[in-house]
Image (cartoon, rainbow, N blue to C red; front, top):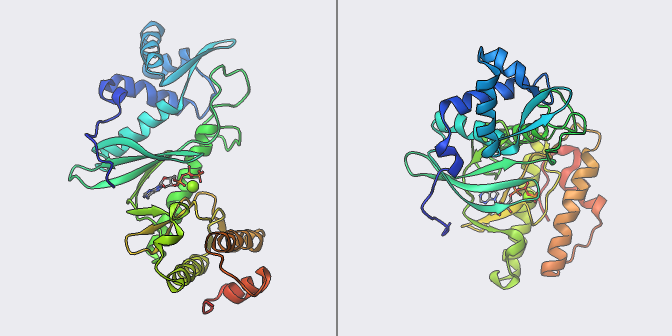
Length: 310
Ligand SMILES: Nc1ncnc2c1ncn2[C@@H]1O[C@H](COP(=O)(O)OP(=O)(O)OP(=O)(O)O)[C@@H](O)[C@H]1O
Ligand SMILES: [Mg+2]
């Protein structure tokens, strides 16, 4: 990738003790029941004095792994960094991650880092971050983990990672061109690097001929068809979520918002994906498409069956 630097495990991570992690995971467990976990309950859970717990909480607060809130009781909740620490630790213990390095990309709802395993293999770690945590915690249900609450950023982020991992696993197994998933924990997904370039960065003159452009278009449609055959519609397909690998073959990434083909919205979302692709080819390469969108949809995806392309 050309971006390899001395990889360091996240700075705070190295300084955390098993006791710090114990407190973090107790807060996580108790967040299934509380938005803000009462200090008293953490102490009771661990059979520690409140004073000892308070001291530990202050330490975690310094690292911004938790925030403290005063309500009718005093309590604590995980921040995204605290949730990161738990997920990364689990992946380190599982042997997935050895070192984690610099950010190599950032989406609107995630950050993407380079990581290596203990054999030196590089891969991508995508941390999902949906919504913003409210440190003042004055609003209701902000950091609740277990409840299927749409106002809970940690929960939403975990759900997003789970959905992405599921889609990648099934699609990769079926031979669809997606990054090979490695592991998932909480809101973090590890996957292979797609060596190449995001489609939106490609310049027109990087293509030798119209035929090459047509081949790329056909390959994109083919991969959409293969995904649909597995029951998956990407749902956010565009030049921003496709990379071209070293063979200039398209790889589809960023899957958490996928829609199942059985969904009521399937046709609408598939039409939108297809239209994004057509618009890109029109704008970038002045490609002309004679038939209209609904005819193309019928042509390519009739009865969700494979149809020959162009
Ligand atoms: N497996 C991968 N290999 C190489 N680069 C990747 C990989 N996954 C993501 N990236 C890079 O990171 C960027 C962001 O990834 P992704 O689209 O998955 O994040 P996101 O937060 O969901 O994005 P957004 O919400 O902005 O669409 C991509 O544009 C791409 O350049
Ligand atoms: Mg994206």
